[in-house]
Length: 304
Image (cartoon, rainbow, N blue to C red; front, side, top):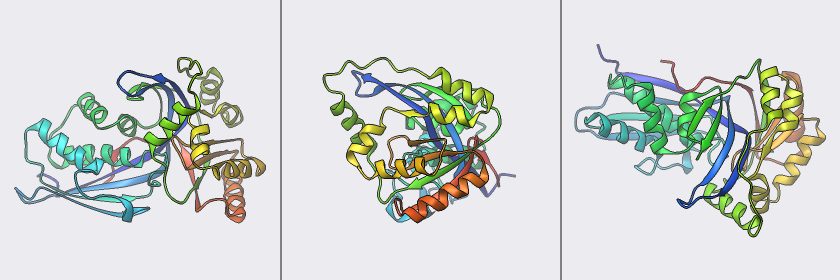
C-alpha cells in the first residue's frame, strides 16, 4: 500500500574550505570546496493530494515568514522536476519545518530541495535511482547534491561534482546567526570586485584540512578553515568582523563565515566548550541568536 505521507530530515552544511577560482564564461566560478553536513536540519513532509490538486506548500519554523510558497521555492521546483522526469502529475501537499537559518550560507533552500526529491520519490513510489536523483539535484542548484549526499565531501565544478571524503570522529560547532541574509550572487559579485586586476589562482583543497578530518583532530581542522568569500561577506556586512573576533577571543579553535554568509561558524573542542562559546557570543550581543550542532550528519533521509 502506498504511504499517505513521508517525512525526510535533511542537514545544513558548512563549507570547511571554499576556494573560489576565476569567473567562468558561463557566469559561474570554478570551485574547490569541502562540504560538511551538520546536525541543524529541516524536515520536509510530503503528503497525498487528490489527482489534479497540484502542489501545495506550507512552511513553519526558522524564517518561515520570509520564504515563498510558490514555484520560486526550490522545494516546489524539486517536486515539479521529479514529476516531469517521471511523466506524472505533480500532486502533493508539502510542509517544510525549518531549523536551518534562512539566507544564512548554510544551504537551507538546497536542503529543502533535496528533501522534496527524496520525500516525493518515496510518496509517489517512483524508486528513482540514486544517481538519477543526484542528476536532478544538480539541475536544481550547486548545493543540492551535497544535501542528498551528507557526511563530508569534496565539491568541484560549481560544487555539484562530489567525491566522498573521510572524516573520523565528531566535531562540535557554534553558529552565530545574523539579522537578515546576504545574497549569494551579491557576495560573489563583491568577491570579483575585490579581486579585480588580481590574478586569481585555480581553486584547491588544503592538505592540512584533509589531514585534520582524517585524524578527527579539531585543532588541526580549526587552523585550516578558510573561505575565499569571507572578505566579500565582511565588505558587505562589516559587523561580521566583530562576530569573528568575539569567537576568537572566546577560544574557538577556528572561526569562519559559512558559505556566502552571514552565519559565522565556530569550531569548539567539545560540547562544554561549544556551550561556553555560545553563551559568550550571546552575552556579547554580536549576533541575533546562536545554535550549537555536531557533525558530520547524514544526508537527506526518510525518518517517518
